[in-house]
Structure formats: C-alpha cells, structure tokens
Image (cartoon, rainbow, N blue to C red; front, side):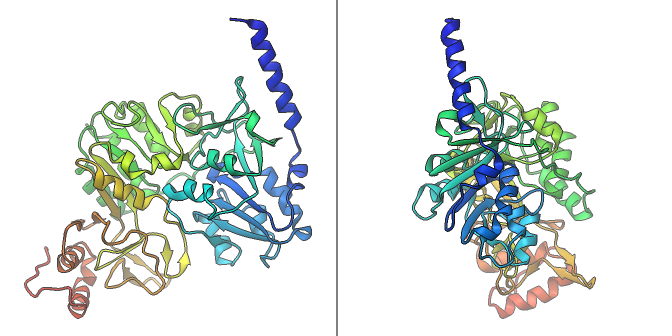
Length: 460
C-alpha cells in the first residue's frame, strides 16, 4: 500500500470536512423567507439545527418544514408558531409528538405510502430547498452513515439545493444495503452537534389479554423459514417473545422498521436469513427505533442491510421471498373489510406508513400471508364498551387498506380470511370474530346493508 497516497487522501478529506464546518446557529441563518426545509426520518431529524431555526421565528415568514415522525416529542419549530405564518409544519407520518401538535392545528399530515416517498421527493410534486439530517461521524473514506434512518435520505440529499448534516456520535454506523451513506464531497455544510442521546422507546407495557390471545393465534401461522415483517406495538412485541420460545427455524426478516425483538431473535439463533431470496443471511430494514442496546447492536453489524424505502417497501422485491408473514395493526374494520389504521374519524393519529406495501408484498409471495390485527372492542372515555368491528367506518375515517387488498383480519376471537370472499361472506367472517356482545346488532346492520344471507351461520 502507498502510505503517502493514503495519508494525502486522509488530509484532503480533513481539509474538505473542516472547510464545511458551520455552527448550528449559522446553518439556521441560511434559511430565508418562503423556503422549504426537509428533515430526516425519525431519529434522523436534526436537533441543534431545529432549535436554532425556532429562535429565528419572528424574522421568518412562510417557511415550510416537512418531516417524517417527530420523536421523542414536539420539536421546537413545531411548537413555537401557533399562527402557521412563520413555520408551516408537515409530516409524512404521525407519531405521538406529531399527533399532539396536529391536535393544536400546528402540524399537517401529508398522505403517502412509505414506498412512495423517494419518488415524491425526486419529482416536481414536492419542492424543497434544504435537507438536514443527523448522521454518524465521517469515516476514513469520507462517508457519513445514515444509521437508523435511511428511507429517503440519499434521495433528499441528491435533490436539495443545500445539504446540511448534523453529526451525532450516538448514531450507529450501519454498513451494507443500499443508499445508506453520503460522501463529504456531496455535502454543503456540517454541524458538529451536541451529540444528543438518541430517543429510546419506553419499556413496553404488559400485553393485554387480547394481544396475548392474538399472538397465540398468529404463532400457529408462521412456518419454518418464513420471512417476517413485524410492525410496532404490544402485539408484535408479544409475538416476538412467543417466537423466541418456539422451535421455529431459519427465519428471515425483511421489514420497514427494525426493533428490539429482532435483536433477541438473532441472538437466539432463530433468525438466519438463510432461505431468503433477497438479502440472504441479512436483516433488511429502512429505519429503526428502539433501545440503546439495540443501537449498539446495529453499529458496524454486517448482518444488517440498511436500504432505502423504495427497496424495502417494494412489493415486487419483498414478494420474491417465500412465506412472507406481514403483521400490522389496524384501528377499525367495517363489514366490507375496509381497514382504518391511521385516524379516529377525521382526526389524524398515525399514518399510512408501509401497511399497504407489505399487504401487497405478502400477496405476491409464495405462501405469503398478511394479518391486520385489532382488539375486538375498547372502552371509551366514559367506560362504555365499543366494537372495533362496525357496520360502516365513522364519518371522516381514512381507509388505509381498501377491501380489495385485505387478506386476513385478526382479533382475540379468531382469524378471518377475507381475500376472495364475497360481501356476505366477509360480513359473516368478521361478525364471527367480533366481540360477542355486538354480534347480533352487527347481523341486523348487515341485513340492512344487503350483505347478509339468511342461511349464514356465525360460529360459536
């Protein structure tokens, strides 16, 4: 090896890096009226830059800020302008923080499916001036890893007039995959941030009785060598624990979100990826949120493949894997099989995310199955029991997954396989997994809606 050439290369990288260093305050000072700023996904959202930009509120007007999730809580720019005259904040996915400011009319939801985001960003449908993201420190080759927040990162960098990176030493470096890093030569400014600790998901609550029952039903649907996609929440966590205690072998994972339960599955030797068609012997994902232990597991781990969302959420690619098992949550289902997974009436509480992407992928997979899961009932603020399976979705509810795509619906009372079924068959199957207290009323409504046969029988 030519050590002089190597040393010269390192010196050039250092010079380039130092020449692009800027304070968070000066970086925020580059933003002008009527400009649009795009932030990195979830853990990639800048911290110091956002705080400094909020300080400029009174001198700026009509600045559009678009993000995707707002963990751990409301960011300074989303909380400082109740008028929406200075900052108009938009999000492609609502988490708890976004939901809070959205309820106060300080955040607007931008409907999309995760698999569409890169295409939206590269097109003239979405115009932006500056892209800002948290990244890992630069490596010896001059690259910054996007770490736990790939999704649309490189696409956003390539299309921005101005690229600003906020370096955070807490960001794990994730090798492998695609579009997982950016070189110093493609960056305009670098902020050496305050290294704010990454948000960690709170310790999960004990599973409800309904979640535990649904997990038991689902474990029986997973064969050896299955390729898993698990969403977030109590049910996927509970199912993950059951899989850990099972005798399943050679599982694979191709998912949107990488979570703690997947670390445990790997450490127990249950996940090998050996029989996957794509990314063999690797876990493919596009973003991650979990514990510090999980972030440490990710750092430099060659078993992980960080991909852009156009890859992880591409049904044609994911569906190449046999026995794809996709498990996600939904909020409400009507008797036609329409699923609302993101709103309570017109109130936005979550987002479309990648649900339809993986429902489609499972349909294309040989032996694939997709499950949309919900408890059969809930209690409202007055303590009144309400059904989550209803004749029609409430006015204003967003249909996240249309009835033409839905495969299987799961409650604690069973699994209803809807694909290929007629309207009366769907009604019968859904009423059969509804809470018993609501079944008679649901039958009456199905009759009024002309989707009930008098010969239909509901399984006891």
